[in-house]
Amino acid sequence: MKTLGIETSCDETAIAIYDSNKGIIGESVYSQMEMHAEYGGVVPELASRDHCLKIIDVLNEAMGKHSLDTIDQIAYTSGPGLLGALLIGESFAQGLSTALEIPLIPINHLEGHLMSPMMEFPEISMPFICLLVSGGHSMIVDVKAKADYEIIGQSQDDAVGEAFDKVGKLLGLPYPGGPYIEKLALKGNPNAYDFPRPMIHSDNLDMSLSGLKTAVLYKIQKIQDINQDVKEDIAASFQKAVTDVLIAKIKKTIEKTNRSDVIIAGGVAANKYIRKKFKELENTLKIRVYYPDLKYCGDNAAMIAFVGSMMTPSKHKSIKSKVRARWPLNELKE
Ligand code: KG4
Ligand code: ZN
Image 1: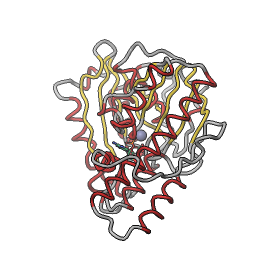
Image 2: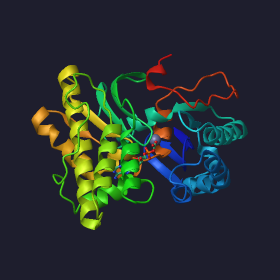
Image 3: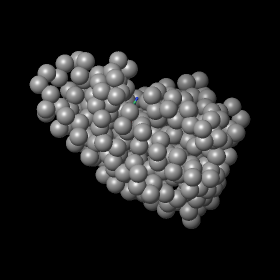
């Protein structure tokens, strides 16, 4: 069975084909990042317009030599995300499904991130813990069974990716700051500055990142000459502080839940320092740690097509809009 996945929830226009026997057999991602960088963040109206402009080319590239007639069903991101951007993907998906007379399945974007490592590691089985860290979300999810997700911890303020981006801005780095901070940190001393680790000792699984970002701001304001060496040290010290908090929360999660598999997903999961530090937990905590292939950490349609391939499409065809700007993971159970 072939599932066509469509993703347009934010600033990536992406389409992929997942074949139940062969895995991903075609995919294309167009990133609008360069366009939004000029404004220091995603501009929703520009995002919608650009999805409109690029989606046909993205479809053609993803299809390659495959014909649309061979597609059995269409899965598309219906939320959470930017409403205008989601509507472009939904309208496109509805058009294709009507023309091809095949089922249409709305997918939760966060569920796509949760499941993404399973494409590469079929041995992962539920239940497992997922640390979902992106620009808009930072949560620890107990994945009990398909569509049975409990959010057991989350950031009380900034998302982890958002904190990376804000600190990037303070250091004069381009948007989004995450990958640039990782690069700078490679040459820096992670112990140069002792930034706070908010809520690291709290008994719950929640996190807080905004105080850490403010501590970086105050430090920068105090330093006379923010030269390259200082920037590298700040980047490395900030990255270490964030990682320490995430590691402490996952340790506490394992203590509380006794789960043995941990998945790290979302844009921040691309960070190699974080990947390495989490992998080191395998021996100490006797757990297995998985993360998606680098190209599937950020937004992509492969994860949407993959989740779609696990769903049974509804027999009732409906062209009612299903898009939702807000769609928490714990509201998926029917
Ligand atoms: O999942 P994603 O592509 O989009 C959503 O937010 O849904 O995540 C983007 C976020 C941005 O905040 C970006 O700075 C962060 O992921 N990010 C990173 C790295 N690569 C992307 N943060 C830290 N280190 C990275 N290498
Ligand atoms: Zn995402």
